[in-house]
Each structure stands twice: as C-alpha cells, then as structure tokens.
Image 1 (tube, rainbow, N blue to C red):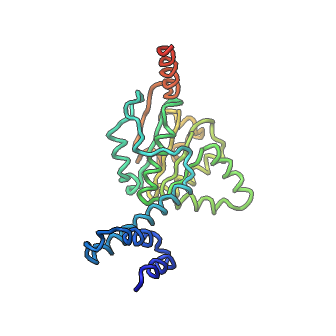
Image 2 (image 1 turned 45 degrees about the horizontal axis):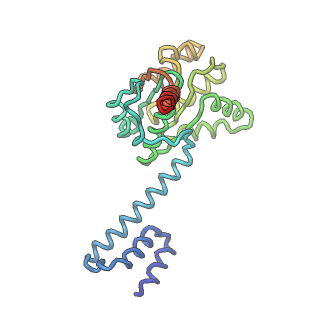
Image 3 (image 1 turned 120 degrees about the vertical axis):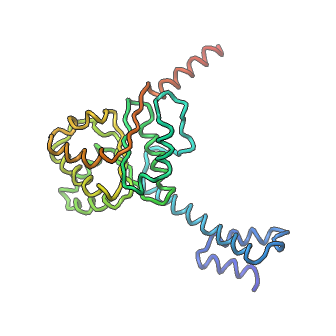
Length: 253
C-alpha cells in the first residue's frame, strides 16, 4: 500500500496522533531499522498520548478553574506553613479515590485558591472531573434554579462531579435556604465524591458561620470528618513580593 493513502485513511478514522507519527516516521532515514512491531507500537503510543492530552484539556475547560495553577509551580519556600509532605500525598490523588475532602484555610493572600486550583488541575490530569465554584455565586445559582425548575438537574450535575472546588467559604452568614442547599449538595457527595474548600475562616469557626446549629452539625459531619486540612499562615505573598521589588529598586538607585 502506498504511504499517502495510509496517512489519509488514518485521518479519516480520526486517528490523528497516529497519522502525525506516521508522517514523521516516513521522514526518518533510519526508521527501517525498527521492526514492524516497534514502529506500530510507536504509532499507537502517540495516538494514546494525544487522546489523553485532548481529554485532559477538555476536563480543564469544563472545570473553569480560577487560576492556571500546576503542581510543578508550587512554591514550598514561601513562609506560609504549607505542609509539603501532606500536599505531595494529595497530589497522588488517593484522597479522590477514597472520596475524602481537602480543606485549605488561611488569611488573605497566602495562596489558598492557587493551591486548590493546582490540586484540581492534578485531578484533571488523573482523569477525573472537576468544577470550580465560588460559594457566593453557587448560592445565587441555586436560588435561581429553585425558581426556574433547574434545581434537581443542578444538584445531579454537582453530585456527578468527581471533585467540587468551593472557593471563599464563610464570607457571610448563610441564609436558611443556602444552608439547606449546601446540606443537599454535601449529602449527595458524602462517601461518593470529593470536595475542596478554601476559606479565610479557621475550621473551628465554620459551625458558627453556618448559623443554624442543627444544620451546621449535619453539614460539617459530611465535610470535615473525612478531610485533610492544610492550615496556612503568614502575610500576603503579593505584599511580600511588592516589598521585595521596592527593596530591589532602592538598591539599584
């Protein structure tokens, strides 16, 4: 069979990775030194690699992460008490497989959302679905869904997501409707899916921030008791960067 018909047929079959690898092989002078099985193996390997890459890109688009954070860029030298050993264990994804949660707390500017997005990015790479939501916006969406008939559908969507990232937890006291919506969301996920939460409030203050003691007990029972906690401290990293930049400018002048 001629080489160009093979390339065209690979394209028609939507085996684009194999088609590109086949074209590259044809341009290699020493490719004939490889056995047929080796050349075929390289073609299949390329196809699998490109399909995985496309699927990961698709998962990341659907995740709508606030920041393009990746595990490789985590700054462990920053003075914020990040537990490196725990964070590296979380990057393995075992907590997702075991349907556990991650709670990241600390003051403004220490990188809570960035670290949460880095974990979520890693989850996407590992083949799981993720969805980023700011808690205030989530409750707005839930309130609208109650009125337009999408409530059950929205709950189902959230329940099916492997990792739900809830950013900015505890910014304001919850309404009764928000408390009940939150309980429904976490009850669906408890023991079946995983949740990441970021908050400026320490976990010990979450009960009070929820408002209703009975609902707070039920919500936190489903969220905290099977969770890994990353408790960050220190000043704003952006503030420290600005101070270093000013110091550098003064030294130059």
